[in-house]
Image 1 (cartoon, helix red, strand yellow):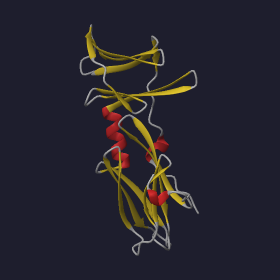
Image 2 (cartoon, helix red, strand yellow):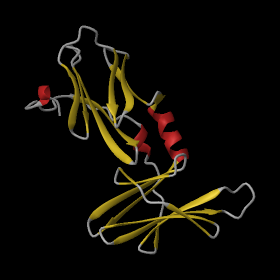
Image 3 (cartoon, helix red, strand yellow):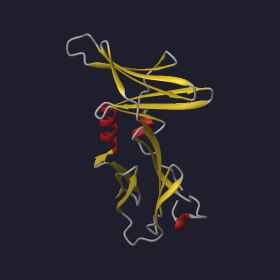
Image 4 (tube, helix red, strand yellow):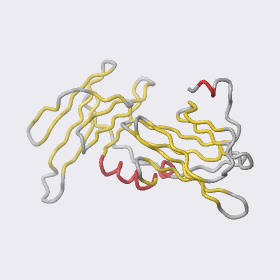
Length: 198
């Protein structure tokens, strides 16, 4: 939270998005003063950008999430309204999400009222648990690899195995305490802004 944000509450959130970055899911909220040009960006409830007065009511606002460059693009629409688009890592959010779906596998499990979000990045072979990169070594096993780690007395195994079918690729699994966890599918709401009227 910046010094400027202390004591300042959200007044008019006009758009919000959920963005997966480095194994973590971030909630981005955007305030836009339609007469003052005011722009405020909140990431997971923390203010990361504020400008209370801008002469130009449209344009781009840049900010970082976990060292990834993000831009909120304010575009004029019909009847003195605006459209809001989020760009992540140089890609429109929808295209960024598609790239994430291709490059990562995600599993979500709740054990003893604790949510575990495990993300395997296929391009880097990194494993994230609740947004924290795990440093465990990957071991070669018969037919593929296993990455084993422990958290809160639970044993996690991220496994990759050949599909056994020509051009079938590699299959990825998560086992927690020797039970397979189904892969989480990307929610349609993840890639769309939610417009909120003030």
